Length: 446
Image (cartoon, rainbow, N blue to C red; front, top):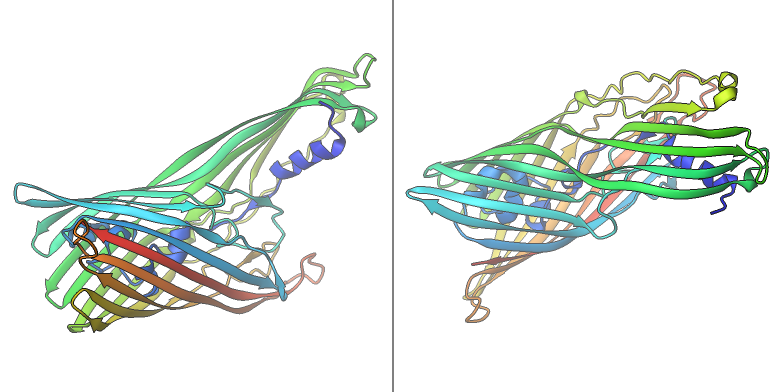
């Protein structure tokens, strides 16, 4: 199969990028399910969160005591700009679903839960770009992730339960190979066959939680989510002869190989402490504080290794040493979330609640006055939503059926980046924007 030089260069450019984007998994930013998202994610002490407890606090899975099935859809749009120009950061959208199944062994109450986030565009996405190019560090690659979480919880005594499990995220690894004749001195004379070997693999990390109800009006929650790092292994190899078709090759059975090992997606260790208080029967108020250990974030620059065998011409090629970048310098953060839910209507077969919330997430990204350009800002999230519960829809479905929806906006105030060097190729720039979020979730109890 004949290939022009542009095809070879395109493949090389894909693998030879100097850096990748960083960020945590999509649920960290956008939440799971409309019930919690409408309260800005303040849900570590929510004992009636159903499937969403798989993320917010596995220990609370056993609190509801009922089997439930949740299915929904979430859409998140990124209007993020640098110097007033939209950066076209990919939207995050997809299905969320899961189930909670309670059980009992003797006097021990148990619950098993599973939740799923399935993007409807692609199961996973990786992108490598130049290290010096400004990019939204926590959003550029975060949206496109398949995520599965499985957990089990047990009641230690009435009002106190613990739980934990494992979450799975997707990543890819693979090698692109070209074999045949590399045209020289005319690249258009190349005759190469292309083959790819790419796998979709999973990365696992644990989480655990404690749920406690010290009084009828107060519940407390503590959640731990472990750090994880998605490593991306990619390669590009050209092997065969170099020369002109129909003549003796200049190089016979040579090869050029480039291997790139990069750090594609990072989630910091997180510890969330939450409280839920019922000052009156129809009102509940939630407050969460989450510590995120971003200081362990590693420089995402790719480690690139090049090997080649040019036979008699090997001594003519001098490869530069790999470039070494300094630490990223991210710092730890404390995210504060608050939310409330108010019952506004109660009928014989229907009830309705309204919800609202606010969250503040300081950026972990330091000033980018040097050669790096990780773009991020502080984040203010304002959320609202409503939920309707129906009873006795049919004789087959007498149990409650919930419909929840939410709308939210995360505002990123404009941040000015000034460069130390007057000859910096990027120069000073301003960055800011808004994340628009919406979703619908349904729950059927059995």
